[in-house]
Image: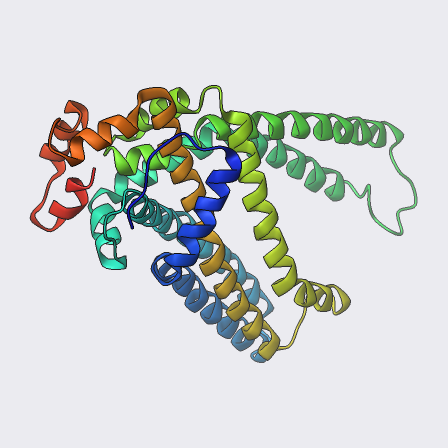
Length: 335
């Protein structure tokens, strides 16, 4: 698919995102389905283990299985989900420049640099959201403490007024701090929103990609926020449609739903994860290219490269020389 590079409005980026997604649905959804499929299998295994523990009346085993399942799923979401985003980003970069792409080629291009992408995502998440995690953990610790002291006991004969005042004051402080840290996390995330495309397309190391994202996103973070907000609304809408019924049944039955319903819920979650993730990757990758066009005249640079008038930037060539491998000729050649 040939494309003309030029500065795009937010509406045009959204239109281009929809166009690429629609015309390359099987490719982009296929890349995400690897992550969604692994998540589905692990979720079904966890459901089976939980049912086995219930059948044997192993309450402690049920708790252990649930905790281990949450930890494993969290790691899978971080590792495989991150690689899926990188692979989709690489594929969208090729498609946007009118070059061929495939599921296998996208994963071949990013798998040898797995550590780099995971480190990039670790650094960006830590910098943006660690304050929220910290304040939440502190408040959770406080809840456990006051519960151990019997403040919330339904049949408590007396309560400590001083402890109640401290708890209420701490709760108010927690809400204000959490709100402030949420705003901080969003602002930091906007600074780092283009780090994955920079790392993937330009073959940059993690900290270089973060600096690159800060530079490229400057002056356009309001537009990036609107793009992310629209993608979030789509995700929440799909999640509400596919998971709302199961959530209501779970609330009605105190968190317990039939096994067959849990399986159907996970199958629908597989579809949601498969369909939604490419929207984020496509939108932010297109925004990355748009910022390069606006700030660096990348449209002219790409046109000159396509007719053999210039060589790729030295930074990209240097990284490609270090990281190149026989089966990655295609991936580095597109950068």
